[in-house]
View (cartoon, rainbow, N blue to C red):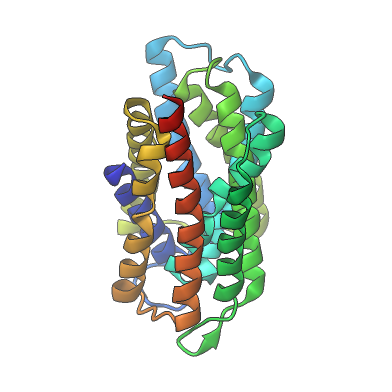
Length: 289
């Protein structure tokens, strides 16, 4: 999970560099978000297809309804997240995305019949208060646009839907098939949007950066899957949120993002709410076993 968190942090760093609108890296061209998602999807799709063909797995899977929902929800969630990486400080965009487990649980109540302890609603409220507090913060004495915070929350909502779809497919389809449906759905959509809105022709080292987005994402997903397969989710999940420390550190040293007291407090509240939920689930798992 540490490797997974670090790989995702590097992906976010590269996306931020390629989509930077402040000319922090003047030698690198600014790429539209649709193009970044497209490259990420194409690379992931090629890797997934190679694995599926090698293992001789049914290409379109079994639970096609929920695989498709996973693909659509994941596509929307990631695209919106890439937009927030462009328009929000790295630490804030990443931490708001970390609120996705809250929406995962909320949707799981209806989709997967998951029971929720009443105190969990308090933990949810703590995280949402954190999001509101972030909206009061500033970066370099410039107020944070609440619009992008809302878009970040919408991204987390669709991620919650995608996670529930993954749960639905756990017993019917191979993990690589579940992973593949995201780029399978997103790649053609992103290509159309890219051709309609304009694209940038990669130059030099930019090809390597675009390639790394796909490769590092695949490493992160494989590492996370292995972590969850070898230990209980309740024990492993807290380690995931070390990514927030990566994001704050990278934002400060690479992009000169100095967060205000409000923004820092908001990030802490979101993580506290999510982690309290995780620890509660861990206690419940222990009590059952």
